[in-house]
Image 1 (tube, rainbow, N blue to C red):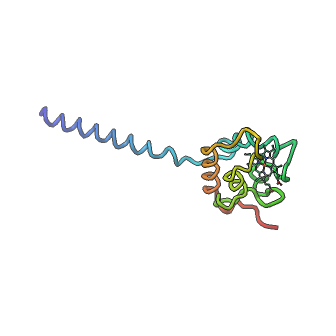
Image 2 (tube, helix red, strand yellow; image 1 turned 90 degrees about the vertical axis):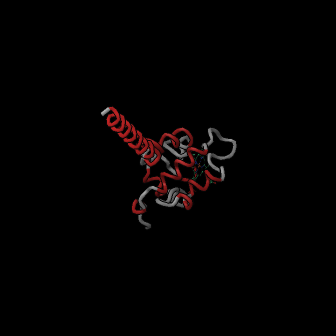
Length: 129
Ligand code: HEC
């Protein structure tokens, strides 16, 4: 009788451990949101030159629509393709913000922006005109 109880408790502990692991794995796959996760980075590091008062390179970074439209060169982001996105390219080569301007974008922020663009459905691209 005592032995069966021990086996039962052992099994119970094992179940708890397995369930705990499954929830820990879900954390990094959370969906990124423009307003919540991305905009604060732009607000802190880009909007003083690409926002309400100034539109350097004719680029407005306050909304997703404006980013998809882009500036003088091209759309700033290409949904689903961070590698081909001008915004990511400029950050990757450390060209934005312009040299000597601070604060700079951190590696973690760049990684977050890459993940955000790559997860974006391709259909959200504005149609060429
Ligand atoms: C101090 C002002 C300043 C800040 C801060 C700044 N930029 Fe710029 N940005 C510029 C200027 C000036 C240009 C135009 C450069 C040119 O045409 O050679 C530009 C151009 C760009 C372009 C290209 C637009 C186009 O279509 O040609 C992108 C993309 C861009 N910036 C992204 C960013 C991002 C992302 C940040 C924040 C991490 C940022 N910028 C912060 C001044 C700034």
